[in-house]
Image 1 (cartoon, rainbow, N blue to C red):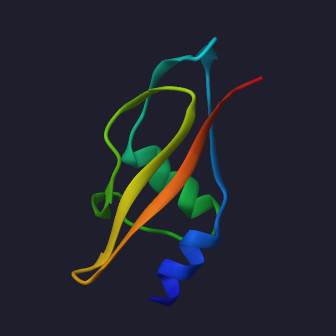
Image 2: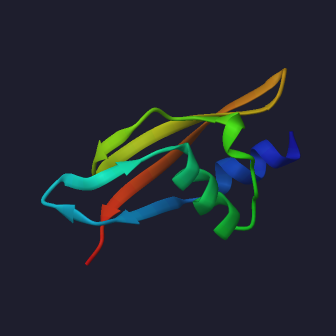
Length: 81
């Protein structure tokens, strides 16, 4: 539960190459796991459910930390400048 509170406090921004709002490629749970590891909260990618995102904007991923502890993790995808 302590990890869940720490994750909720994080402000996750993932930068990706984009043309307008559309991304060149996609953002998956692997990219979210990498962003969490960079923020100091390593979570295995198999516990993150996000779907495939192909546009910039705000989204939410589901992180399963324990059978009884599941949280919604908000994150934002921004275009690389």
